[in-house]
Image (cartoon, rainbow, N blue to C red; front, side, top):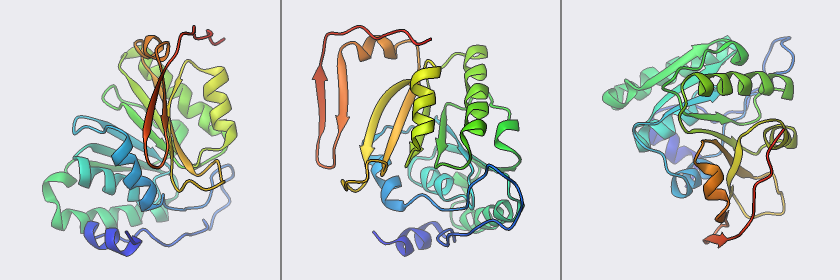
Length: 231
């Protein structure tokens, strides 16, 4: 469906791409996640009402509003740029006027992503290339610290992931690749959603199955293998 359909349905304004007017390095421009990608995420990946997402580099809040509206999940948007943060609050006020109860589970914070303190209730974390690898590493380390203090299944969900993010998770952490969801089946291999999970039970599951998502089907391949321990 067209962007205008969702913008009207959610009663928000998030479509315009904007370049930040500041001198802060390592943070990228504002570009909202396409509704097409968000719609596929809902179809291919389980999100429960009990889940609590954190959207790092949340901009004007599109991801949080969409997920909250269709799943009831709690979402916290973390945005450094004050102008975008204020626009997300404006959107929250408009969204609340039509979705009062659901809006009680939406929060927006104006701070550095690497300084955000991950709570024990937050279990899913979304990134659309909001900043450099160095900041991504700091944020992931904060997530891992929270996991160590309060063990629970944790997912990192990335749209259009840069290779540096993927390499870090694959090589330097104990996160396991869960699924890839192709967005438009083009030759652009980055136009996908990649999901990684940290959970004590996932290793045993990975020894049995490879899960592959394509645009028209989901395939499960049984395999016999041992997962190499990450260093």
